[in-house]
Amino acid sequence: MKKVNSFKTKIVNEIFFTSSKSFVDCNIMLKYLDNHLETFQRNSVNLTHLDEENKPKMVDVSDKEDTTRIAVASGMIEVTPEAYDAVIANTAKKGPVLQTAVIAAIQGAKQTSTLIPMCHPLMLTSVKTDIEELPELPGFKLTVTAKLKGQTGVEMEALTGVSIGLLTIYDMLKAIDKGMVIRNIQLEEKSGGKSGDFRR
Image 1 (cartoon, rainbow, N blue to C red):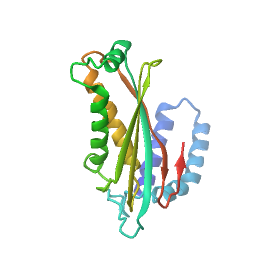
Image 2 (spheres, one colour; image 1 turned 90 degrees about the vertical axis):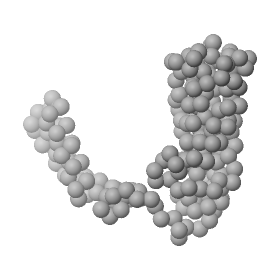
Image 3 (cartoon, one colour; image 1 turned 45 degrees about the vertical axis):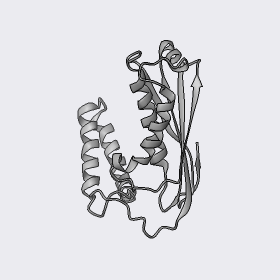
Image 4 (cartoon, rainbow, N blue to C red; image 1 turned 60 degrees about the horizontal axis):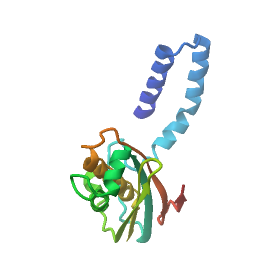
């Protein structure tokens, strides 16, 4: 209940201290909020990384069945034409950019539980990567596919792999281009597990 009350207090403050609406409008908004607090409270209980006292916890997956789980994530990095040409010509001072990014992506996927507090350490059975050259951007799109047979999904492993791979490209090219933009890191699809399949 404490979470609901703090949520309501936040909304009340936003209404009265940042809104130009009339007092009557604010009362209407507060009545709407009261009518939906029960829904908010019911939904908040479903956050699996919180216990009954709203303390963080790692989800217990010991009762789940082993199933094959696959997740595909992708992301892009936009670079300058000069930086793009250096990658394609393999003239970047730090060495082969894309090859290093592939290794970093695999390593990142394997280290996800070290980086993300509530992720389980997983025995990944496969991590595959693909880098697409985008000369019209210019830039690169990195896709990571993670797979295992286990009790929890590998979405975070795929997403972390993409993030670390793209950050590695940035690191390799920052001497040429400090204005690179990493964007659109997203889950493309996943299969396996109780929540079912997902495809963007």
